[in-house]
Image: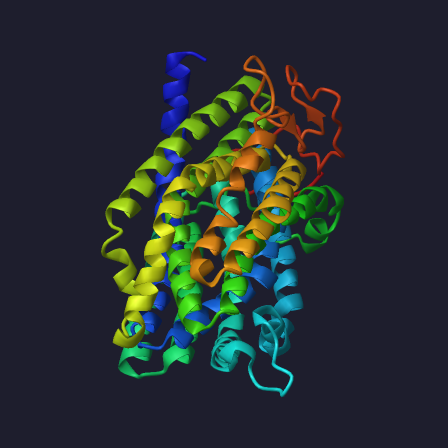
Amino acid sequence: MGTADVRSEAAALFALTWPTYIALLCEVGMSTVAAVFLGRTGSPATLGGAYLGISLANVLASAPIMGVATAQGTLSAQANGAGRPHLVGLYLQRGLAVNLGISLLVLPLLWWPTPLLWFLVGGRAADGTAAGGQGHVVAVATSFLRAYSPVLLPLSAYDALRRYLLAQDIATPLLWSSAAGLVANLGLHALLVSGAGLGILGSAVALVVAQVVNVAVLVTIILSGRLHTRTWGGWAPARAASNLRPYLALGLPGLVQVCAEWWAMEGTLFLVARYGAVPLAAHAALMNVSFLAYLAPLAVGTAASTRVGAALGRGAAAAARRAAWVAVAAGASTGVATCSVIWGARAWWPRLYVGGEAEEGTILAALAVVLPVFAVFGLSDTLQAVLGGVLRGSGRQSLGAYGNAAAFWVVGLPAGGAQVRRAEAFVRGGEAGASPTSSLLGAVAGCGSPEEPPTPALSYSPLLGVAVPGSRNEGAVWAPEEMPPLTMPAQSAPVSYGT
């Protein structure tokens, strides 16, 4: 790899990463705002119950939606790289339909979640009373979920639009729309939670409205900036609904890849919930900060997925390898920087999440216990985030699925569960059960000699139906996706979906 090529790739990666990172920061910042406002009500059950509700929504809906939607990201990036932009618009329609379909399927579970919540937090005692004093937490989570469940519809639309833009190397609109959503969320929390005293109901309404604002602003930017003219040929529902096999062949392993990780992380919250409201509130605060720390390498991984996918779409195996290595180096750097900032601010950031004097000391003490563990495993999380993006860009979600399933569910979550059973380690076990296992995915995805591509997937293009020449995967064959016209229309001309 020449120095000039590496610098050029680093610049392109950075141009995608920084707006993606700020957009992700604003998106997660919405739940951070909720945690801060609810935490300062002085009731650990309020914060813990709300986060229990959000976790259940993530497990049942957000993770499956984003997992299946990895197919849209992979195919769209490769289609754009191959000079077939009309397929990017078609994949947007397909992604929207699949995302909304999943949302509608799980909405009833979020509207009537009480039995599932009781199962997750340990059930009831023999006399029918709340086991472990969790009645208030379950009641809070149930009320929150019923008001929060409509958020799945704007979230489904936003995820499809986000992948549509990123596949075209466009990220700045995501920054502005998510920032608008964050501002709306902050104002609504101040109005509804602090001002009107609506508590969890006000917080849920604020989060839903903020996501609607996010999508509305993003659609406005796309239409007003004519960012769709290159790829959009009008609605084609019959075409989008046909030939789902290649999409699902990527999307279902992507579902396993994302859910194996996300469910394990959320599973630690359910384990900790069995020990009461105070441990749950402490763990909710920890998880929020953990997600904030994860965003920088996740942004790098998201950009890497686009860069690798586009390179494979145009048949450039060497460029895909270069994009992967540059992303790994960038991810490691951002991981070190993020963990250093959080460690340096360890004396004050836990206080953002507590407001009641009676429980403050206990929650702060619990958070102090986990900080060393959090810092140690930050780099392995970085590796996992970046390599996961590389695998998605190369259409090898199946490899990521195997790695995540083994790492989190065979090794990590059982180890974390064993630690959680020790009352004095209720928070430390929850974090330790998820973080160190990410290194196993790195070992799986990074197999190969130094002379070979860093993963078997780096030069494989599902869109083209073949392995890119020069790869270790030349024998692989993929069912071709919709084949476009040989002559593409000019960028400003209307796009046709005709075969």
